[in-house]
Image (cartoon, rainbow, N blue to C red; front, side, top):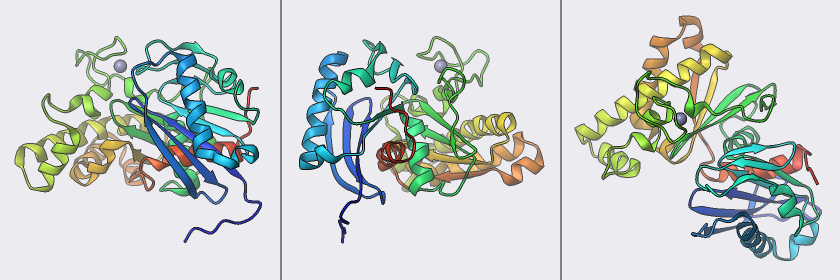
Length: 304
Ligand SMILES: [Zn+2]
């Protein structure tokens, strides 16, 4: 039973995906009190998009809108956390240097926190999920691409300009598959849904593997090898020992975890290999919402 405590603060959490926009009302205990989901739709012009988003925020928050602690927003692209500016979103080609915090502030006067969705997922897993209590870990969201959230010394590490964590575009094959970023052989062309053969989906392949289909099992074994190569690289560069896997493909982890772990062992120093742990997300798609809410409660960064 959901217990509503009086005076408990609530935050609005927004998760923008390639196809769906999700808004949740989250309390300070980490309970998602209300949740709404809508399709992003074809019109993705920033101004129109923000108007629709503001409408969904009001609808979800209802009468609580007057007392919310803030709005946390996770977006699938390159965000400037300090300035509240979204530089680039692969699924939203019209967005270039959009002053997102300012656009949302036209409708709401509360603090607004922005971040890349993988960073939000990392904060969510640290608050209520598999990474609880881990002061150093890396979040990897496995979906259309690979998003990375680098969590060091108890907080997100964003790099000098806020562009850190674009791990999906590290090169793992010199003359490999071409990538949407303009390069070739990027990790995400081998270890995200782009690696799935045409005419099928990761979900279908996971179901086929559940039923013992040998081609599907071989696909996931190879997938795990490429995932392990990338994680091995990250572990060697950073010394970070814990990797949390989120995103839709992480659900298939029983089929690729073994080959992934074997590959990490083959490609890292034995002492480091013993320490590296790969942990499936405990929160699934709610992780992004919980991270966005936690950022409001615990990380004041509003740029209004
Ligand atoms: Zn790339």
